Length: 151
Image (cartoon, rainbow, N blue to C red; front, side, top):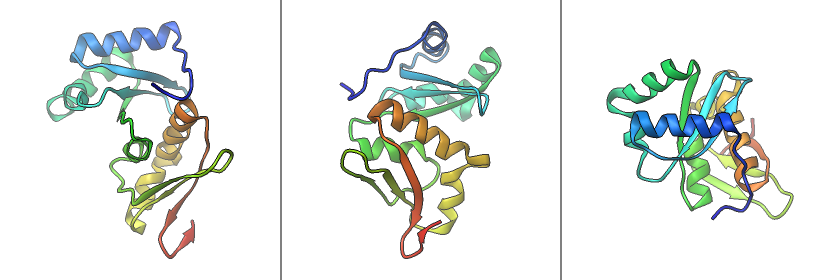
Protein backbone atom coordinates (compact mmCIF):
# COMPACT_ATOMS: atom_id res chain seq x y z
CA UNK A 1 0.00 0.00 0.00
CA UNK A 2 2.74 2.49 0.92
CA UNK A 3 6.26 2.81 -0.36
CA UNK A 4 7.89 2.65 3.07
CA UNK A 5 7.42 0.27 5.92
CA UNK A 6 6.29 2.30 8.91
CA UNK A 7 6.53 0.55 12.22
CA UNK A 8 4.35 1.56 15.12
CA UNK A 9 5.45 1.24 18.71
CA UNK A 10 3.24 0.24 21.62
CA UNK A 11 2.33 3.85 22.45
CA UNK A 12 1.35 4.70 18.86
CA UNK A 13 -0.80 1.54 18.61
CA UNK A 14 -2.46 2.46 21.91
CA UNK A 15 -3.17 6.00 20.66
CA UNK A 16 -4.69 4.61 17.43
CA UNK A 17 -6.90 2.29 19.47
CA UNK A 18 -7.92 5.18 21.76
CA UNK A 19 -8.92 7.20 18.68
CA UNK A 20 -11.00 4.27 17.37
CA UNK A 21 -12.76 3.82 20.72
CA UNK A 22 -13.47 7.53 21.28
CA UNK A 23 -14.33 8.57 17.72
CA UNK A 24 -15.22 5.37 15.76
CA UNK A 25 -12.70 6.53 13.14
CA UNK A 26 -9.61 4.75 11.87
CA UNK A 27 -6.06 6.09 11.81
CA UNK A 28 -3.62 4.38 9.47
CA UNK A 29 -0.63 5.97 11.17
CA UNK A 30 0.27 7.91 14.28
CA UNK A 31 3.35 9.99 15.08
CA UNK A 32 4.30 11.28 18.51
CA UNK A 33 6.05 14.62 17.90
CA UNK A 34 7.73 15.58 21.17
CA UNK A 35 9.24 18.75 19.72
CA UNK A 36 5.78 20.30 19.32
CA UNK A 37 4.14 18.23 22.08
CA UNK A 38 1.54 16.75 19.77
CA UNK A 39 0.22 13.54 18.33
CA UNK A 40 -0.28 13.51 14.58
CA UNK A 41 -2.84 11.04 13.26
CA UNK A 42 -3.08 10.04 9.61
CA UNK A 43 -6.78 9.36 9.17
CA UNK A 44 -8.30 6.86 6.74
CA UNK A 45 -9.93 8.61 3.74
CA UNK A 46 -13.55 9.41 4.51
CA UNK A 47 -13.13 9.20 8.30
CA UNK A 48 -12.01 12.79 8.87
CA UNK A 49 -15.46 14.07 9.90
CA UNK A 50 -15.84 11.26 12.44
CA UNK A 51 -12.34 11.82 13.75
CA UNK A 52 -12.77 15.58 14.22
CA UNK A 53 -16.30 15.40 15.59
CA UNK A 54 -18.93 18.11 15.71
CA UNK A 55 -17.22 21.45 16.28
CA UNK A 56 -13.92 19.65 16.91
CA UNK A 57 -15.34 17.85 19.97
CA UNK A 58 -13.45 14.61 19.33
CA UNK A 59 -10.12 16.37 18.92
CA UNK A 60 -10.73 18.20 22.21
CA UNK A 61 -11.72 14.95 23.94
CA UNK A 62 -8.65 13.11 22.58
CA UNK A 63 -6.43 15.98 23.68
CA UNK A 64 -7.81 15.80 27.22
CA UNK A 65 -7.47 12.00 27.41
CA UNK A 66 -3.94 11.87 25.96
CA UNK A 67 -2.67 15.14 27.44
CA UNK A 68 -1.21 16.39 24.15
CA UNK A 69 -2.29 18.50 21.22
CA UNK A 70 -3.94 16.41 18.51
CA UNK A 71 -3.50 17.04 14.79
CA UNK A 72 -5.08 15.05 12.00
CA UNK A 73 -4.25 14.66 8.33
CA UNK A 74 -6.49 12.81 5.92
CA UNK A 75 -4.63 10.18 3.91
CA UNK A 76 -5.00 9.99 0.14
CA UNK A 77 -3.53 7.44 -2.28
CA UNK A 78 -2.63 10.40 -4.51
CA UNK A 79 0.57 11.60 -2.86
CA UNK A 80 0.15 15.20 -4.06
CA UNK A 81 -3.32 15.37 -2.46
CA UNK A 82 -2.01 13.74 0.72
CA UNK A 83 0.85 16.23 0.95
CA UNK A 84 -1.55 19.15 0.31
CA UNK A 85 -3.71 17.80 3.17
CA UNK A 86 -0.70 18.06 5.50
CA UNK A 87 -0.65 21.84 5.04
CA UNK A 88 -4.35 22.52 5.67
CA UNK A 89 -5.79 25.07 6.26
CA UNK A 90 -3.20 26.63 3.91
CA UNK A 91 -4.11 26.44 0.24
CA UNK A 92 -1.56 24.47 -1.79
CA UNK A 93 -1.28 25.33 -5.50
CA UNK A 94 1.01 22.43 -6.43
CA UNK A 95 3.26 19.70 -5.11
CA UNK A 96 6.29 18.79 -7.19
CA UNK A 97 7.66 15.33 -6.51
CA UNK A 98 11.15 15.30 -7.98
CA UNK A 99 13.14 12.29 -9.05
CA UNK A 100 15.01 10.08 -6.61
CA UNK A 101 16.94 12.44 -4.35
CA UNK A 102 15.23 15.71 -5.21
CA UNK A 103 13.25 17.62 -2.64
CA UNK A 104 9.46 17.70 -2.62
CA UNK A 105 8.53 21.28 -3.50
CA UNK A 106 5.28 22.80 -2.31
CA UNK A 107 3.86 25.94 -3.93
CA UNK A 108 1.19 28.07 -2.27
CA UNK A 109 -0.92 30.47 -4.34
CA UNK A 110 -0.26 33.63 -2.33
CA UNK A 111 1.64 35.17 0.54
CA UNK A 112 -1.26 34.70 3.01
CA UNK A 113 -0.98 30.93 2.60
CA UNK A 114 2.77 31.00 3.18
CA UNK A 115 2.53 31.71 6.91
CA UNK A 116 -0.18 29.06 7.32
CA UNK A 117 1.94 26.53 5.43
CA UNK A 118 4.90 27.17 7.74
CA UNK A 119 2.75 27.22 10.89
CA UNK A 120 3.49 28.65 14.31
CA UNK A 121 7.16 28.10 15.05
CA UNK A 122 7.42 25.97 11.90
CA UNK A 123 5.01 23.35 13.24
CA UNK A 124 3.05 22.78 10.01
CA UNK A 125 6.04 22.39 7.72
CA UNK A 126 7.64 20.13 10.35
CA UNK A 127 4.50 17.93 10.36
CA UNK A 128 4.76 17.66 6.57
CA UNK A 129 8.49 16.85 6.78
CA UNK A 130 7.86 14.06 9.31
CA UNK A 131 5.03 12.51 7.27
CA UNK A 132 6.73 12.83 3.86
CA UNK A 133 9.82 11.12 5.31
CA UNK A 134 7.65 8.38 6.83
CA UNK A 135 5.52 7.71 3.79
CA UNK A 136 7.87 8.45 0.89
CA UNK A 137 11.42 8.64 2.26
CA UNK A 138 11.83 12.11 0.80
CA UNK A 139 12.50 15.59 2.17
CA UNK A 140 10.27 18.64 1.86
CA UNK A 141 12.12 21.69 0.54
CA UNK A 142 11.18 25.34 0.75
CA UNK A 143 7.64 26.60 0.38
CA UNK A 144 7.35 28.55 -2.87
CA UNK A 145 5.08 31.38 -3.94
CA UNK A 146 4.61 31.74 -7.73
CA UNK A 147 6.71 34.52 -9.25
CA UNK A 148 8.35 35.12 -5.89
CA UNK A 149 10.92 32.33 -5.80
CA UNK A 150 11.92 30.76 -2.51
CA UNK A 151 11.01 32.50 0.70
